[in-house]
Length: 559
Image (cartoon, rainbow, N blue to C red; front, top):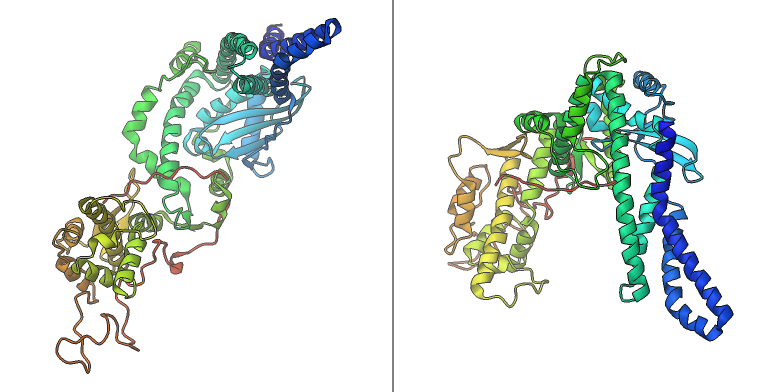
């Protein structure tokens, strides 16, 4: 009886706004018809003001019934491939008083959710889906993971998912109608006021009902696996979500622009979490309290206190250990779920280990301006784009020209001092990237993982030099490239000014600095550096990987 009354209340609440819109539209149409029977002329005048409002309401109601394309994402977890996980889900569903889901999908989000395909506005259930986040599987204990699963399955037994679709449609229709109303029209302005007040009251009521549903699902989880495991699971949700966001934004795609992804992403995620131990422990002890008035979930502190007060011991025996133990050969499955969360372009990315990815990503980030600066040096000196050409152009006092893009009008009206300072920054970054790439190839710079940072580079300990200082000297008011040339000479290739020998006499220069015509001398390190900083083909070690949404890419490489 309690479940029936809650279902009726839910249906009534989510239908208030659409029914109001329908009633208002019907009243306006009926009024227009009545006016036409009394006076066609008057009816036409009324229609001029009423018809636009009826059309706005009609389009909003159309959104309510319009088909929504909502494909199921994630990697299917089939029962014959993962029987242990499915056996646990079936036991938890039985304890929660509901049928098991029709399918389970592993997704790339640090979350878990349920979805139910329905017909006739939620009256008929067709198919149930359970979505499990790969980060939860990777980092939760099996008992904690079981608590999260039971919470989601309890939404089925409480019929919370039955009317989720129509509730979503109702909100879409409401928002669409408000956004398309003409606030300059007096009738639509009055209707906007009415719907906003009506919608606010409904939203408050549905928020209270949603929070009661969440509390009921929390209680079901505690009674299934115990209050201790459920509290531990809820405390772990924020640390996993925060660390996963850091991983996606700063680490996973560090080599994306160069065409690379990590071969074992979750190994890196584990290292990141270990490096953030103190921060995550603080987050675990004090879950964030950012609940908003219309949040469908109660504040986490209230949920944890309520679960702890139950002192439930649990009735389901869950295998000890990590949730990964519930999966057979979990690494490929987790990786497939992660790739499913990326854009299709991820299929073209090569897979490399983390040390290689750190090196590739670091060089790519540092050489962002290198191609442009080398191209300018080649254009100004009529020589090949190389590190030697760039150093010679700096010695020739061409700093401002090296940092200017001839095809861009930006900065042309700036004064000489401003253009010089801008060029100094651009050329300095480009030169620094070129030198780092050259020294990395020579083995003088080594790259290493540096969690929670993206990575770190270390100059050979035998070199008592500071690369930033040498680069600053090269792009100063009075350029001094001697320090960089000496450092680069020490790797085995000359970077000093060449002496010209040949038939010319005195100070004659028969051809620009560079290799002798027809020379078979080896190319110096740094010459022919790719303009975009993309690693060479011999760095690619693996076949391409797989798929959707690309996460953000914030990088913070050490200088």
